[in-house]
Length: 341
Image 1 (cartoon, rainbow, N blue to C red):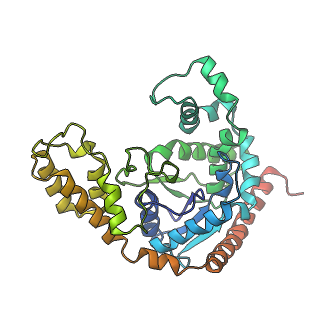
Image 2: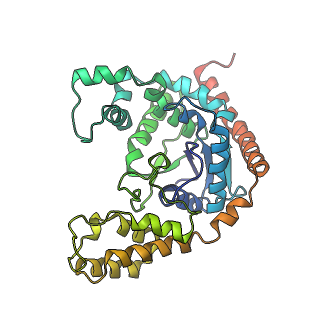
Image 3: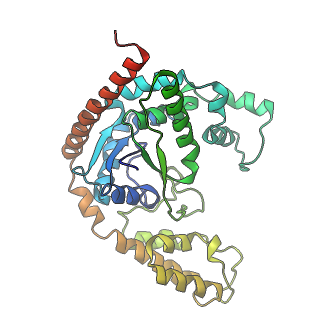
C-alpha cells in the first residue's frame, strides 16, 4: 500500500505543456491522495551541464509553474535537493553497493552515449571504438546519477514513485539497492513501486521532443494567437497530401494534443473524421489550439501572483522539513552500518 510519493524536476526555468501533461497534472492529482514530496533536482542538473549562473532563477521560475498548475504547499512538501545534504551522504553509501557494469546497463547511460554519437537507432549496438570515444566525454557523476536518484527516493522512504515507462529501469535499480542494503545491514528501506502515468505523448512543434532548447515548445502562458501559430506549424500525417485524403491520427502529433486537451467523445469524433477525410488539418489544428488556450486561461495571472520571496519561503520551509526527515533516515542507516560511534 503506497503512502508516500516523491518526484522531482531539474531546474530548467519556465515549463512548457509537455511538462504539465507528462508530470505536473499527475502530481496535482496525487497530492490529494498521498503524503507528497516534490523537489528541485539541482544536483541532477549539473550531471549534464556546467553553467549554473541561471540555476537559482530557473529553479524559482519552475516552482512558479508548479504552483500555477495547482501544486499546493499545504498538501505537498516542496524543497531544493541541494538544501538537504543527506541526499549526497546516502548517495555515497549507496555508490559502494553498485558495480560499474550494473550502472552501464541502465538505459539512460546507453541513451546518452548514442546521443553523443548522434545515433538515432535505439537498438543499435555500439562498437568498441565508439564506446571508447564516448566514455571520455561522460562524467562519473552522470554514470552514478541513477544511484543519486535512488538516494533521493529512499532518504524519505518513499514507497510510490510517479514515472513514465522509460523510468522503470531506474526504479528497479532503486529496489535492488534497497534489497541489498537491507540484506547486508538490516531492514531500513521499503522497495518503492512505480506509479505509471498514462499520458499522451506531447511532441514539439517540429516533431522532436518538446524542449525550450529546441525552440519547439508551447507554453501555458502563450496567448491563443501564439498557440495557434505554433500548432499550425506542426507536421501532421505525412501521407495525407490533400484535404480529401484520409489521414491516420495515430501518427499525428496534433491528435496527441486532442488526447491531452479534448474530451473523450470529441477525441473519438476527430479520430473517425480524420480517417475518412471528414475534417481537414487546418480545422483540426485550430480546434486543438483553442482547447489548449481554454485549459490555461488565467494561468499567467495565477503564476504572477507568486513573487520571488513567496517561492523562497515555500522552498526554505520545505527544505527544513525535508532535512529533519532525512536526518532521521541517515541516523538509522548509520546505526545499521555500526557507524554510530
